[in-house]
Image 1: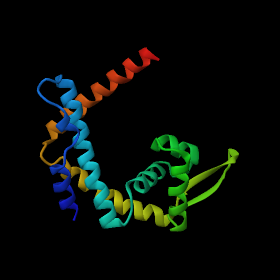
Image 2: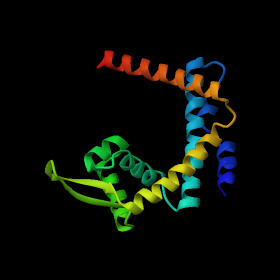
Image 3: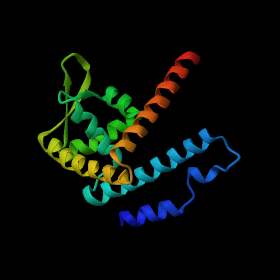
Image 4: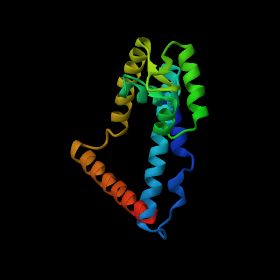
Amino acid sequence: MARAAIRSASAAPDAETRANTDHHDALRVWLRMLATTTLIETHVRSLLQERFATTLPRFDLMAQLERVPAGLKMGDLSRRMMVTGGNVTGITDLLEREGLVVRSADPDDRRALRVCLTAAGRKAFRAMAETHERWIIEAFGTLDRGELGRLADLLARVRQHVRATHKETE
């Protein structure tokens, strides 16, 4: 099923098909990055649903909590995930009902709730994360270690440039 999703996604028009030879190289690269990211994300979403009966937003929320064992405030989760507080609340409600996360009063702020993974949540996330990592490694399997390093360096340079440029325009 997941492989079929990749085939159908690759056959469908994507962001890259909007570019032509008249467009600047930077625009064509941007559209290729967007199309590639979308293709990989679609594949990962499908695999998470198929193998773990979960969604990418649920996986992402658990990943944020796994990085901070003491837990995070709901607002911090929202900022880290770049989604609305309502989205975080809905995902947290579902995960809490399944016993994967727990909410508790924040000791530093009586008005806030802190969300933490439960032992069952940590175990479930570890299984998903190990498999997720294999999927990503497989997606980049056509590149050798040196190529991956160069790609990472190039993307870091672009990110640094965009951040610096954005700061100048604020």
